[in-house]
Image (cartoon, rainbow, N blue to C red; front, side, top):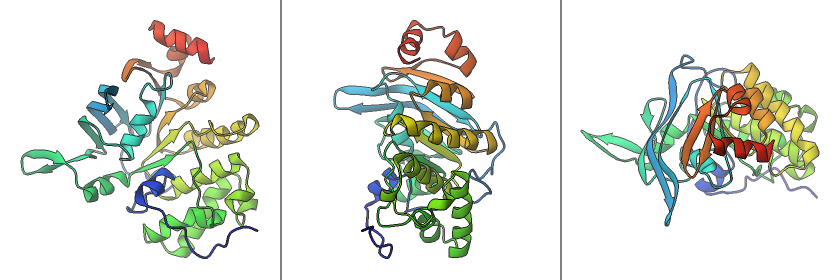
Length: 294
């Protein structure tokens, strides 16, 4: 028996952010999956000397990098090299031990108090974080809500969108990910690939400026991977949304990326356009890694 669709399941703030929906904030207000409020080519994300440690282990070591509006940047490298940590820092699921992160020109985990830069209040971080959406490895859909409500819940209760408007937008996004015939199903009635496509639609429903994708096919059976990647390719090629992608699907990375960054031991050791990175990498560590995954 499917669960009822009447009472939302209560989740704490970190759990809902783990689902890729930040129910404590609003989001961008433009049209389409990305709000397109800033001109392409302007800097949207910057990491400045960002360090992250877990005990004695330094996962990110004074990391510097930037992502321009409308660009698709893919992070590659071995497990444990710091790629997912970058995404979790952007979602403020983790806090940096050093350095600063800015999103759309605003500090994410810091704020100005007079002439001093101090740790940001949760309210400040929430306001900046509203520009970011994320799709995780696990789908984390609300199990007691049907597909349509999974997508409309946050726009109605966070953005204050009317139910009619949220319903119309959700139906458009669900159609975009190819699930119109599954609107009235619960997550448990869907395949893993279908659940991940619902998660993508739900993230886009909040109109983020940037979409973070963390190994979104790693939990899927091999025969379901292609459908999800096709949806993401379509989003990348037909919308203006900025993407930061962590993946081991190298053909997908080559197809959608403007830039590819190779990580090892918490540092970027090489970066460049995908054609160069996948055919003529300069660094031996990059060559070794690509040989192991291609």
